[in-house]
Length: 211
Image (cartoon, rainbow, N blue to C red):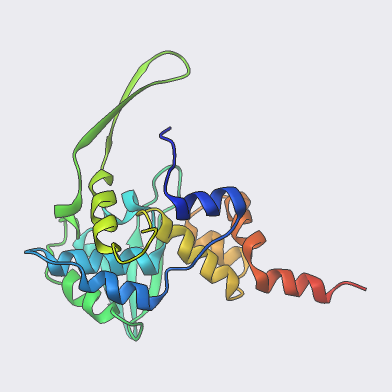
């Protein structure tokens, strides 16, 4: 596995600390998206921010996976790395969600929403049994784009950081263990432990139980 060097990500992994990416950061990053694929790039960043999906997950979302259900936008996210497929409901009233939805409706049903951002890089490594394993890493190009879009920040987040940003924020707001497990698409609650530990809301709740 490649060494993780991104400072924001390392602080989360090593210290359980996180400096949130807030909406004002998002607005600045969105304004930095230029070129011929502005709508697609903006929609990708909006999707990554709200869903907390892995880059490899939101890169495979198809046009038919996004629908409107009254005042909610439903996004079907197919799990990777043993993650579960789940449907995420986001209020249409959330900032930039209408923009995301409008873009999604321009994409054909069986075409990935963000196909111009999918890389074709093939990674090769040796398994524990000594076998050569080859697999496609679809999100390689995103590291370049995130660094460019968030260039106004001293430590720009990598693509995966928005996943931790979302779940940490939800935990901080009081989301239950089950809520986090469902939206994260994990089979057990083990992987949500870092977000629970990080949550000051949870810490204060426990503190009130002390006698």
